[in-house]
Amino acid sequence: MRISFTKMQGAGNDFVVLDETRGRLGLTPAHYRFLADRHFGVGADQILTVRPSPAPGIDFEYVIHNADGAEVEQCGNGARCFARFVRDRGLCDRDTIRVQTLGGVIEPQLMPDGRVRVNMGRPVFELAEIPFEAGILQAQAAGAWQQWPLRLGEGAQASTVLVALVSMGNPHAVQLVDDVDSAPVQAQGSLIEHHPSFPRRVNAGFMQIVDRGHIRLRVFERGVGETLACGSGACAAVVAGIRLGLLDDTVEVQARGGLLTIAWAGGGANVLMTGPATTVFHGEIDLSENL
Image (cartoon, rainbow, N blue to C red; front, side, top):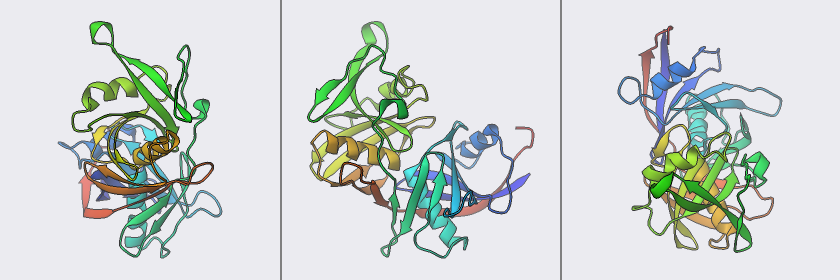
């Protein structure tokens, strides 16, 4: 079968966007993996699907599949591209929309300067909701908050890292590093993602604090690997830095693919993320029905 798609990117985090507002395409996990494949498909970190409103007061359903074909709860950079897509394609004429994701309701807003701001909702810290199974692990106090020690690897190659745990509708483990350029993202990313304390795996963030209003960040995304930017990861990193007493309430996040602005007033406040959303091209592709 032949389907239409739009290729988009937000701070270098790239997506294939599909319109299912007029009917389901009936894609399988294998189809999503094929679309994400950079050699044989279109190439993307995630596949984003636009579906009709699932409930009153909601404008659209936003479905996210990682490059490994698994459906996930949230994608912040994708949310900005989602909002740009529905507006540019004439599916909605408002600047602000309410969107249902697997991880909850978010509110993207198109800004006058062309960027998109997303109300990402409240961060979650309860371990069971992240989810995180501490077992015999003991948290270590850090400022007014805590970090958790994770043992990675076996034998002589084993090491222990300290991570702060946050859910932005999807799970994140954030560690502080002196320099993101030399951080062991590839060596540790998969080990953190698949650590047995995370029953649904986890996104691994590596945060370098430049000053109280600026950080540099790399994220090894669950089911994808390292990406040029991760919106929910940027939110999680800033929230973690604020709770650790290291950051102010508005922070510029420099990812490898671009700049994001994250704001959080603390407590039960929602996290606001602002950044770019760009259409790269439109296309069609043939998919085997036997995948």
